[in-house]
Image 1 (tube, rainbow over the protein chains, first blue to last red):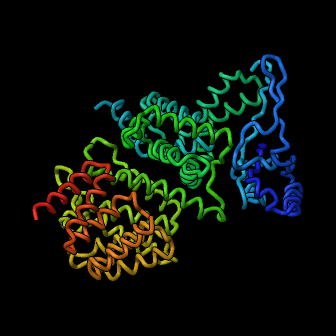
Image 2 (cartoon, each protein chain N blue to C red):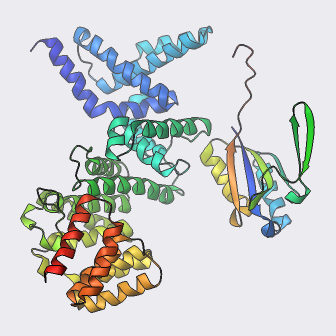
Length: 114
Length: 415
C-alpha cells in the first residue's frame, strides 16, 4: 500500500537537516525498493495558489493556508502497512526537527459499475 | 428442561466464555472488524439453529469460527456476485473442513493479543483506544461504554466507527508488535487498561451504582494480558489494580462518602486479592522494576500493614525515591511528599508540597491542594488550611470528593 509522508518544518528549521543526510535517506529507501518518489520543496514564499471560481481562474500569491510549520517535502513510499510506514517516517531525518504526517493513498475508483 | 433449552443455555455459555476469542480470530481470518462482527453474530445464530438439531460440536469455538467465516464469504459472494469458479470452490471447501488450522489453540491465543494491540494502536485517538478495547476485547455494548463514561451513546459509537475506518483505510496491521517495538507499544496498552481502571475506580464511590464496572473489566483485560504476555510491567499493573481494588468496599460509606486509607476498616479489605497482588508484585520486581511494579509495591506495603499506624513509611518513601528517578512527574513528587509527611512529620511534607506548587506545577490539581490543606491543619495553621481546602473544593468534580472537603471545612470552623 502507498503512503505519502509529508515533511513539515518551521521556516527557520528548513535547513536544520543537511541535504546530504536527506539524500542518503532517500537512497536507502530506494535501495530497499520502498521509495516511489521523494522531493524537497522551496519555502512557502515561493508558493502560488490556483483556484477556479465561477469558471474563472484565480491565482494568488502564497500557500493556501498560513501555518507555523510548512510543507517542506514529501516521500511517497510503498509500505506493507501503517506500522511499516511509521518505521519509514521515523527514519526521515527532519522527523527530529519537525513532524512527518503519514497519509495512506486512496486508490481512485476506476470501476465503471462502482 | 427440554433439550432445546439445554442447548440454548450451552450456546449462551459459549457466547459468554468464547465470543471474544472467536471474534479475535474472525478479524484475522476476514481482515475487517465490521465483517467479523457480523460473522460472529451469524455464527451464533447458526449455532442456535443447528446445535439443537445436530448436537453440540466437540470443538464449539472451531465450529463458530468456521461457520462465521463461511457465512461472511457467502455474504460477500452474494453482495459482489462473485462468478469465478475459484471463489465458489474456496467457499465449498470451508463448509466441509471443520478442524481448520486457523482455529488451533496457539493462533487463537495470539489473535486475542493481536486484538488488544490493534485496539490500543497509538495511531488511534486515546479515547477511541479505550472505547474500542471495551467494545471488542471486553464485549461491552456501546450503551454500556457511554454510561460508564457518562457520555452519550452516539458519541461512543462515532468514536468506534472512526477508529475502525482508520484501521481499515490506513491499514493498521492486525499483529503483535515485533520485539523491538514491543516496550513502547506495551506501554500504550497498559495506559489504556489503567485509564479504564481509574475511571471505574473513581466512579465506584460516586453517586451512580448503575455504571458498568470498568475496574473489573480493566482487571479482566490486565489478567488476560499477563496470561498471554507475561512482561514485568503487565504483571506490575495487574498487581497494582488488584491491590487498589482490594480496598473497594472499605473506601466509602454506605452513603458513598470517601473514607481515607488511614481510617478504613482493614477487615473489609479483600484478602484474596491482596494475596494475589502481593504475589504478582514479587514476580514483577524480580526483573528491573518499572513504574507500575513500583507503584504496586507501594500499594502492597499499605495492604500488608495491619493498621495505619503500623505502615512502613520509610519503605514507602524509599519506593517513591526509586519511582521519581524513573518518572520525574510532579504527581509522583506530591505522593512522595505525603509519605515524607507521614514518616518525618507534617512540616517536612508541607515544605515539599509548597515547593511543587510555588514552582507552578499542579496548581489546578485538587489532591495537591487537599494534601496541603491537611498538613496545614495538622500544623495548626487553620486560616491557611481553610484557603487550601476551599481551593481544593473549587477543583473537585465528584460528589463524594466535594462532601469530604466540605466536611473538613466544617470541622475547621467547629474547632
